Image 1: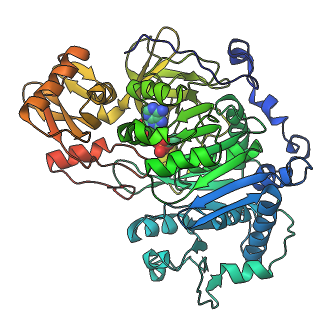
Image 2 (image 1 turned 90 degrees about the vertical axis):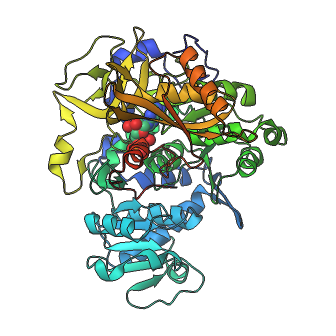
Length: 571
Ligand code: 6R9
């Protein structure tokens, strides 16, 4: 791995000195930023929206810039407060109460955000779904959560198997032509009638906030349940890691169907009162650079898959835009290849900061945050208030540089509180006081963590353990390779061999010479045992909707095994 250290340029203020903070930071201190510290009454919607709408400075500040191919709108904190009050009134009118699950199967839109906060204001738990879900995926989630209300569009309603969902009482339809009757609620018509005043349902810190379903390798997706308490960490990492400052314009590219789209697309920015950009529609380099340019985005949070796409789109597109407002970039969801960081430095003159966390952890835990120098290829260090380590299967800590299970000491605010309906599954994450992530990593002598792969993806070839990420990162350094997914393929003598699936950059043709050249490139650049013995060109490397390469699926397909849960597969 790279020995290089990059100084970070963000984090001019807001950040307590890392060395001072790390050992004595207490989450109790962070609570004092909120008025509920004294009253005990809490609601995320109040802290994220209404609180700002009630101040002279923030009331008329743009909270949301929304752009999709056919709409361009902006909303102030005051407007979002009123719209979400209206939606809360609509829900209340239809009998929704504290603790009910209200799901959202609707594209990113202003209506989405008004509904989302309306749901929280009545004290219900919000369940955002990816709009691309097909019928089975929708059914599994609504069934498991026993959702009583669904917010969707007339177009998407066709993928909701209503007759198989006896608990689903009401469906709010957001659309132009809506046939409303007792069961179907016309969003626009009822919003028009609803009062802009609402008495927020104050809840307990430990009351439900949001439910995210996350796929395991087998079986049904798990309902990961988060509570209002998480806001402390969303707020605090918004300062430490996102480096948010009052006048920032922030853009998180993640869909709210993914935890990144709620924790860091909704909660962290708005708890910190910054202007938030939401871009709907499909990805294209032109649309994305255009959005950075048009809104003068200062802080940008995205994912390696998007950066890799921008990287292979080349320099021409980027030159057409003025990206000079940008001052801080972060990445999440997949390991951030050093090659991508180096591209970022050329393209934006900025370091891309990796951040590691999971749906289950609710918020960032291990990060390259601005006060920490970056070692490209490492995901950084634990944030203050978080203790991370590498443990063996019994939960014993391992020495530096040894690969093992990445684990976190229990007790950070944003931690999930349960897996819905599956207490034994929840318990299975904990070993000897550690939350065990299922990721494989090692820690170096200086406390930097280096991701290797999911534990199940680590390859054992001729007795050597190879992390797929290292091999993938080396592969994409080759000029012909755009993306790579690496798996272990069973082999009679070697246990497993390294097999790589790659997609090629434009202008390259598959040939035996090219593949051999790529193999040699990894062999000389990394090691002989890590060099893929088989390289297959595949222009569709399967990914989840959050941009993760599905190595498990590559492997199942390679070996002709059942594909397991593929509800989040993008292609
Ligand atoms: C937020 C999110 C969690 C899994 C996680 C790991 C992978 C996330 C990463 C990363 C390497 C990073 N992952 N961030 N791997 N470096 N910076 O992604 O949640 O969708 O639940 O996925 O994603 O394998 O365990 P989720």
